[in-house]
Length: 611
Ligand code: M6R
Image (cartoon, rainbow, N blue to C red; front, side):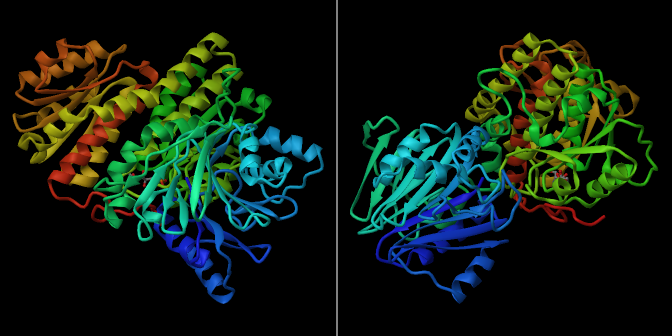
């Protein structure tokens, strides 16, 4: 997730662009850059780090012109650096491109262009677009962009300018958001409305596969085949603050709602449409080495550790490889045994968690290979690992982890399929079936998000909203769901909550059950469903309040429960990714109804960089 802004008009483009980028900094902040067309030249400034570094550079060396594009980056391909920051250029530095998204076939395009003698300056997927546009450019930038995009697979929102076309800004979108703002004698492009709200409230929402040629006095939109498209002009009523959260009252709710798109992004580029095979080349492990692995160690903290537990269950079930799961803070102090052929998989959204980093150092010093699951590209965890699976979830602002968790689980699902196929513990048909199940998940989450009334109603009910304490139970694949549900509730609503394996209930927590204790029971279809129903009956027999999460169509569960949240039917091993969503929503609405500071709960930090 990155932020892009473009401008054409009578104002200084860098002033407008920088004002817009500051409103988009939540989309990414590892590096930034601007390019302008000025007196027949293409001038550019880039910087590593937050936007304020670029502000300082621009103050020292201002750029002129009437047309420009800018970008704030959240790295996906290529570590944060000046050379990888946008805009990217063709070989002659006459065409500049900013991009948000992931070009899935960039390696093939790059190889073909290099074979034609094109030299690349960066490790990014984006640079391929600049060279492709150059390849097809014959004086008409709009035509060249349309033609170039026919070669591209993946997701993009782009802004393109050319030194020989001072009156034209070209924008295109597929999969990543992009809007066009219409002003009086000026126009804008941006990833998101807040970037341009102070300049105009008239907005066009570009749709997938649409390319727009923007001039200060008008615009035209076509699809890649050249068919003309008319879009309705929308008038934005939001105020500035609401717009940054896209109208959601909190970042956490926005991030919960981003999950269908985020999971698609985690899968993007890793699952070949044609061959139905998983590709995880960034993990930097050869097929031979993958076959040799005798033990996997997963280390993480908090929510990431819960995702690690989902990973353990999946990996052991489908690849028959023993997996040790440990809290990074325990691993680092317990003199762990690291046999030969051990693979460590650290999991971390921020990539900066101190305990996780220390666990990596210990495992490496004892000979383990380390391949991490990380969201923040170029972070310390990523840099200190031999390989990485980037989550591609975009920046997570809410302290409570939501989209990072489901994308970590998705990354584990991908890794499991890859390992199982390589070690031949599943056959091709099963791998294909699992990939198909994974692809269904975004749609299932969307269904939950579209039907959340029951969850909102429960969160207003005093028996949940005002509870002193809550218990979460789950079994097998959904034991981690219980742990994660309880953590979400306690960290943002300050209600004491515990997650337990339901089979453990009789070994202690059942003593807590009274008519004031809500017990959230994950009872979706699957091998342990009947056992969960037995637990539920035991809780009811002791007057506990039962809130079940069950599979759509299961009417039997209602007679045993005070309330039920339904989720769509789902392949059991991947069900934690879907089950997480109603539990996140419950915590969110309970906390919001209690008036808690949802995005920044007391005493917590987004990234725990000290012990
Ligand atoms: O950045 P990391 O994934 O390494 O962070 C680990 C935990 O601090 C984090 O998951 C924490 O538990 C979340 N606030 C939970 O919502």
